[in-house]
Length: 512
Ligand code: PNW
Image 1 (tube, rainbow, N blue to C red):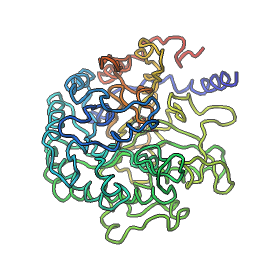
Image 2: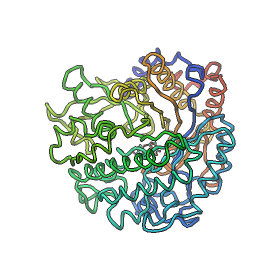
Image 3: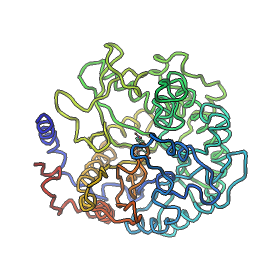
Image 4: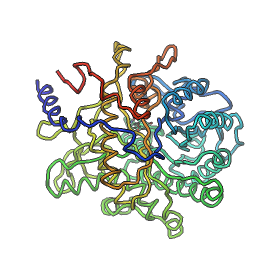
């Protein structure tokens, strides 16, 4: 009963937002429109072509770590079917493709062994195939998966040695692919790698203070050390790119953050400050050092000497180490202050003293998505873009991910999964507000990538969530276009089928 009331009130709030139908012409002709994937989530072939085990290969094989007990051993079998996936992209009419490189395919033993030519060739094949079809590669060097050997030998991100390993890996990639790749991101969502890996322990290397969940770790200290080494690894790679490759190859290099937007729960100063703190602990944690040479003031104030310091030399190395900011944006939440008035703080928000919720006075901030804690809030994308614009002097930005999950529960009919009208509305409404950020806000956003091209291995959720524009049958690995694939193709063609689509009565257009 309560839920029914919540949903209907939420619907009334959305009425003014759903009347807009976005158009390709609202974006510059040079704008990148693409789809995004990552190596571990799609490739499979986990032992093929001299690849070594990654941290995710090892982690997913530990019972109980992934919701449905699955792993990425096969995933979408993209390693063998990449040509089919390239054709899917081509048929969509995208002009770019964001994908990541598996470090363990390129350097199976890190810097302690040779470069694997089979791995090099695999990504060469992809890059050449997409370029032939007018699709620009947008390459992520690291999307969560690292060679397990780096964990076993010296504790990966907790050890400063990783900077050398990462720099070496990046250089091998610039050398091999930089003649054709003009967009490089060093890391995907380091904020997730660090908080999930060293604070909650949900991701490898499964470190945290709670001995029932983690074998080892210290959630108060390790996240900050690991982040410090990761930030310096980013700077090392950018230094190498700028000194040895950029002038000749002419590309851009940046980093990608997981960037939710936050609204104050109450209109009181404490909650407004809490929003700033939440944003600082999310993104400025990484971006402030990379742009300005030090951590944000909000973190210094709270963490004191738990926050490692950058030497003068490191600060110099860090300054202005970004050509663009990549923004992965899915959701907006309310934030409540817990610093001035103590309250219940979640594990991941502990040090920022904020409480996240999706509800205010019994009204949800947006329709809940299949991923818990995620809500559909189209205006959030405009606000997060304008926040980055202000804080980082309108450094060029790309929406490197946004997307909508579907639950793949046993019994979900393929027909319903293919008829993904809610995803279409989500994409249309978020794009509408993105266009507004460009038009009214003057934000220098240069591209937009939908997560994801195909349904894939969704980390802790295994195969229970589907983000693809294409449905994947996990038994046959057949790819089938969802309605959203048709919508994206038409949108890119200058048409938006929302204009003449009739929605089924259970869609959010006509909630029963
Ligand atoms: C992104 N989690 O972040 C990632 O970059 C993608 O790999 C991922 O598939 C996508 O979002 C959709 O979740 C993540 O809670 C967000 O486990 C949340 C999680 C992981 C990754």
